Length: 322
Image (cartoon, rainbow, N blue to C red; front, side, top):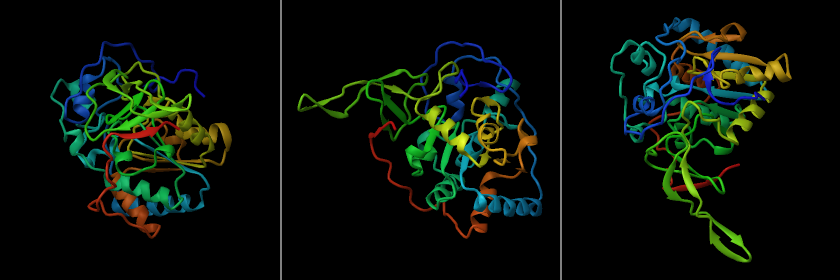
């Protein structure tokens, strides 16, 4: 396990910044604005590559074979899986960090609460339900994995969740229907409503709640960080979807299976841009993630429909941290 489990840019340590501000209603653009100042955001404005449909189709068949044969598959997701939901990415040609570097206004995207899980989110859920995927590790804060119904105990949200509050006393989690108005693990002004038995009587926890979305200098959350390390080290097939793999330690986790456990473990990269780990992958697919996942489900004899009703989002849902 890495000694320092703060998030920092691949190959370079980050610098401290100022205080985070409150969240606005728009998506990743407003999220970027409320983070502390940070000068080195890594490579941005990265060229996108799109393969021919025939080349992608052949690679999807190979990916389907890898998944069928794998005994322990872990999926890793980044901003690229949520662009079709109306949430801008960060490092693409029109990404938030790219526009910032060029000194131009970044795309706002949809309001957080107006976004819906994409085909890729639903496909990951189905692959998990059918036993093809053991765990999911995400750098996204948009909450779309949980909102699509993916089970919390198999999900590691390494950078937090804009819809989640957490009790600092008993660690109960509350999934809200609207975004929390701060980042940086700040107090939200609300109290925990979890009940517990003390000296034979039921009493309320009343612990203070904090937002769960990380700022640059925050430590990665527990138990998500330990859970991610556990599944990564057991992984025989690591599939990265829509991430340029620049933020440590998340970018290193897909390689843990081979480096720390089994030399036969494999890495697959699905991303429009090149990544620092392409040379370590047995398969690299430069295509839109939704297209790849739709084709993959087809090869496995499955399908999903993004227009189908989603599981209801419970108001002020209480979850105990596992």
